[in-house]
Image (cartoon, rainbow, N blue to C red; front, side, top):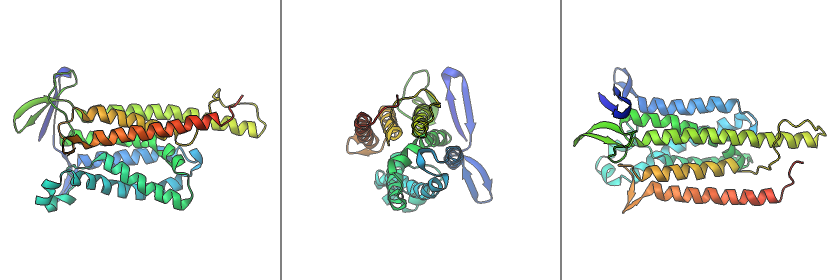
Amino acid sequence: MNKVVFPTFNLEFEFSPIAIEFGNLQIYWYSICIVSGIVISLILMYFSNKKHGIKYEQIIEIMIFTLIFGIIGARIFYVVFNLDYYLNNISEIFNIKGGGLAIFGGIIAGAITAYIICKRRKINFLDFCDYIVPYLALSQAIGRIGNFFNIEAYGIETNNIFRMGIETISGYTEVHPCFLYEMIGCLLIFIILKILESKQLCYENNKKNIQEGNTNFTCNIKKVHCKGELFSFYLILYGTIRFLIEGVRADSLMLLNIRISQLIAIITVIFGISIYINNIKCRKNSNNVD
């Protein structure tokens, strides 16, 4: 049994990382959290049908392949940067039920897969990204709960109010609950992106009304929104949050003395900023609704 305490809030949890057992079959809480995040996000996507000009059926088709290759990419990323261990434990490479997925690896592999499929289906990739990134942030938040059950993705020792007490090889210690920080951060990103999305879609409705000669605007939004705007905010916000959290992680994937996730986080933010700058140019070249 695992035991976790949050001293400041006088909370104590004792649990097994295994949620269900059927004979030799074991289902881990980690897996349940990841699957729950995906399922909840897909259900919410259903109610966003045809937003950004994309049908839900198209999203499902793309997401099936994106999820498969995203999970494979997340595992490969984790294994590559823990290569010494896995070269000596080959059979463990395929054992993901107890953890060992690197989210950046999943995002990179998933993005490449989605781009290829969008290209073949003649779907604008930035429209696709704008459609899914709010729900990507939500599924990440839910998935991070799995780290709690595995007692992983925590940070260095601390005495701040959010500290988490755990038992390690060295004994009892109080550390940063990094998974909790990221869970809260991703939930905030989800809320921010949904607010921005509502404004974006409001503008599109206003534009459609004008084209049809209808002066009854759906809302008072006159700002032009360009493709990839939600995507750019996701990249900037998540990259920033991950960079800061990674600075106190105790289990960061390393390349020499460089924290790999921090390096990728910086690249992610730069990429997001470049898309946002392009959107500024897009708005300057567009006519605002009067």
